[in-house]
Amino acid sequence: MQVTPGDEIDGAAALGFVDIGDREEVRLGLRTSLKIERRAWGVFDAVFERCWGLGEDSQRQRWSRTPRRAPRTWPGDGNPLSMLAARLEEERAVPPGEPAGADGGRPGYSPRAVLRRKSFEVCTEDELAEMDRILSQVVRRIATRRSRRLVPSGRGRVIDIRRSFRRSLAQGGELVDLARRERAVERPHLVVLCDTSGSMDPYTRFLLTFVLSLGHVAPRTEVFAFNTSLTRLTPWITAGNVAATLRRFARNVDDWSGGTRIGECLREFADDYLRQVVAGDTSILIFSDGLDRGDTDALEEALLMIRRRARRVIWLNPLMGDPRYRPEARGMKAALPHIDDLVPAHNLESLEALLPMLHRS
Image (cartoon, rainbow, N blue to C red; front, side):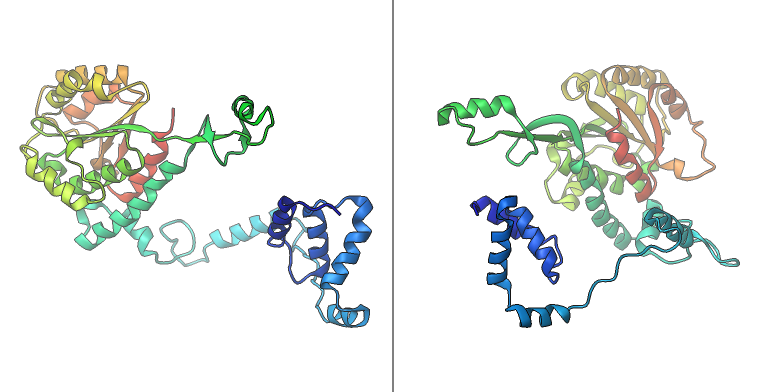
């Protein structure tokens, strides 16, 4: 039998996928993973007996004591998918007289689920701190989304034929080291404009925390604050220290928690920064309640310029958490024709729903 070191590695790995207490599974798993030729099966069985056998009598006694596994059976019509569907229906069913839970299933209490649906304006400091931890886990999903584009990788599954042949020139034409590729991680390019006026006070702290968390997985993120003037916050961001960064923002941004002129600020952004930070793959996020005291004509002109250059414009309005809300404020009415999406931003659940939109074309 010819067994290479690579076959030995495969054989050791195969033992992790079989029932190690089932002698026959171990024998067949090793014979397959070691790539034993058919003509050498008899030799392999003899070697297997010599290495792991206990003699004919004692071996028979030992393996006869091993209980045989019962054949797997499925209730109902024998179809595992039918069984799974029946189980899901059973879990969704609510007994008569019992109120449905928050998620539409059986009644129950989940502190994390309640926290995800709780509005930022009624959260305590401890709850906001817990939300920060949850949010840092949620935004990591952006860093795991794969694009269709293939990039060089040491462990990719796709062989790069051209680069492999180029490497072989250093080995006399032998394909010793194969070049590989894998799908690249798609990291969105974001520009965030956050309203820091007084009407946004209950939401500003957490929305900026969300933005800073996004910056960890999307390095090409630019952050601006606006109220009566526009301020670029990106140079003041300290990696890994959200609390210090938020304090620096509040200390350095003029008219924090004051009035707001959305139109003039967005026009200033379009005139001074649009060509520098916005490209065809950029998503623009605007956090604001749309309560504008300024000129709505300037707002429309600015959004028109931004929309022509950006990939997507998403307006996040915390007031949309109230089902009675209608976008009838002057600023919101002027903005609606020039944005792609108007979405709520009043709790953690609404921010989680935003993440898939950042990858949507």
